[in-house]
Image (cartoon, rainbow, N blue to C red):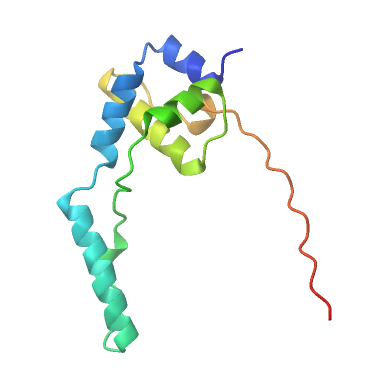
Length: 129
């Protein structure tokens, strides 16, 4: 039994090495990302010191994660094992980048992965003394 992801990459003839390379290029940290993180840290220190409470423009941007898709995550996706949300999103971004290069339309997360309903959490019992 193959998974949606395995069927998709076989249908579109995508190589896993190319997905890894695209993800590394997309998710890799760049100097502007480091500058965003530095601005956030410096602003946080200013707010803690009580000097300023306004947010700089650089802090409103979101830096790249710096964590590309790994071979292990791709193997888990092909096998149909559970992945975290960020892992699925990184794989989706890399696949969409490759499809864009091939002049094909972007896809959504549901086209690659089955949505598994989470088991409901048991209510937390309060401690009584």
